[in-house]
Image (cartoon, rainbow, N blue to C red):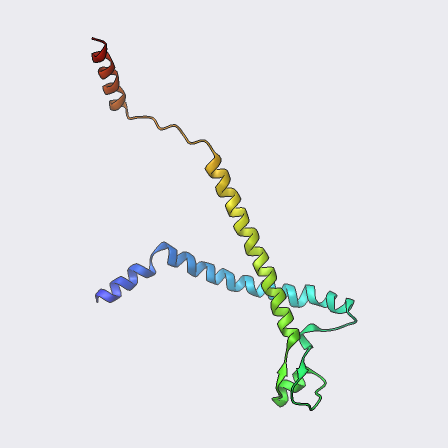
Amino acid sequence: MKVLQEFKDFAMKGNVVDMAVGVIIGGAFGKIVSSLVNDLIMPPIGKLLGGVDFSSLFIDMSGVGYVSLAEAQKAGAATINYGVFLNTVINFLIVAFCLFMVIKGMNTMKKKEAAKPGVPVVAPRNEILLEEIRDLLKKK
């Protein structure tokens, strides 16, 4: 039973919950970035390069000469899918840039927070009175 209690204590720590939320949001963000790359960025780039669909670029290792990646995969042929790899690299670069911008913004806010002058600490009333009594006694 002690192990279950330790696990409960671990799982309910703020850091673990924060991490879980981050993973869930990260997964959703990854889908958005994939859609951005596959549906908005790569089609115009493919059009500029003569109507190339990057996700269908592949090298047929079987030597049969399949016309499309889907056809080669359906036949179970060995392929090098460099177009899919290019899409994945672009996904990674976008995610890395977004994380860089978020962290940069957080660091800027931390620097601003650290640069703010602190609120002066006021001693409790009884300490002030004791200091006044001490000062009066010193004068006598």
